[in-house]
Image (cartoon, rainbow, N blue to C red; front, side, top):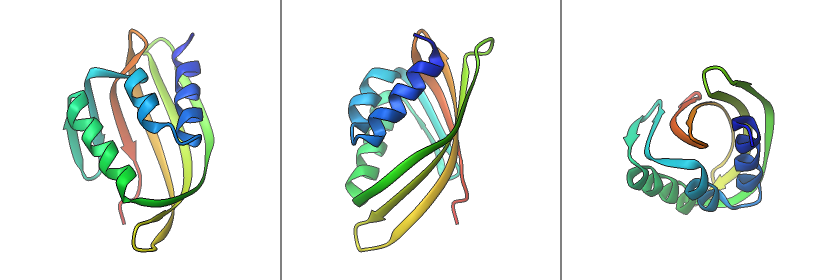
Length: 118
């Protein structure tokens, strides 16, 4: 399985409401996640952040992968994603982001998210 196929499977699982299951399979113990609001290091810290995000969501209305590409020589995958969700408290948002993933041995070791934090 290529990293591109793994990334597609990861996002298929997310779209089916299986974010944490995909996280356990595809994220390395030494994962570093970077986004406009900061950086988290290690699987436990990243897991906690993902669980907090999920706990803040009231309803997930849909997701679409707009584009996905791989640089197999550098083991990088780039994904453009659109998500429509409602946070607890009733704020519905339509989010667009790009994730750049660095893969090693079939798992993501670094993921950087680009989006407008508003």
